[in-house]
Length: 315
Image 1 (cartoon, rainbow, N blue to C red):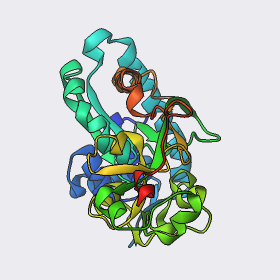
Image 2 (cartoon, one colour):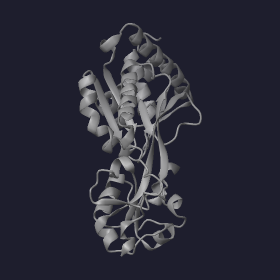
Image 3 (cartoon, one colour):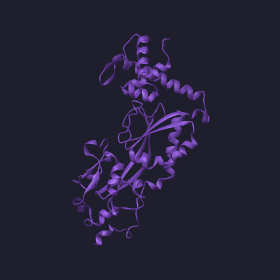
Image 4 (cartoon, rainbow, N blue to C red):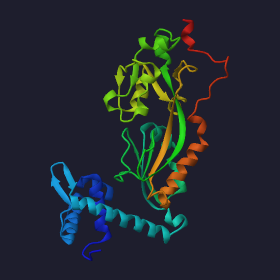
């Protein structure tokens, strides 16, 4: 390695290479925009080669920069392995782990267990990104992701976290003032709440066509939390995960024995990171938390012959 730059310079380089933005890289490195720019300039001067093209949209890797990424990532892996080799037990379970999850899982399951995690791993700083779009593992925007599908290719460790069920829910106030629902065919005359169609980023969130072909959402939101609040207010029916809606006293399942959608949460991590103690600790915590609360993800169906359809059929 050229003696005029250090491993720290490579960390700055990788942060910019993965984000394309000085400001985003600065936030990840917890430093200033100016510091990142200065370190990139210093690295290019030491190597006597231009690694990035600067343009109004950000920093774009040059051909030499793309080649240098491979070298820098190899050094990064070897550095992490060295840290692993010279530390063990709780002393190695320290540092920052960024976990990217879908909004429902992050806000309605994991957030209730953050205190347990903090008590068990006081030296790990967990960054929970609970938004609609899963962050990129390939660009190291996140260390672990909880998603609805595993990558079909790439250097990833993927494992099933848990299956879960979804159902059509409606507020009791809405159901009491609208026509009864005796079968799927009756759903077409009801308003629905759902995702904004052209912002559905994964097929696993496209529910309505699976419930009944041709259904469209009258109120649309990219946020499952907003959808839940809209259903509470009686804006229409909505497909919601069982673990989100099961404790909502004013919501009722529509056609509970007829309509049940199933999805699976996958946990995904870059293979280079799965053995890193702090990342492994987060992985193990997620697996254990889900295993201990399996019943909240899967609704128990009633025994055949004892179930009932929507109670308002008697109207």
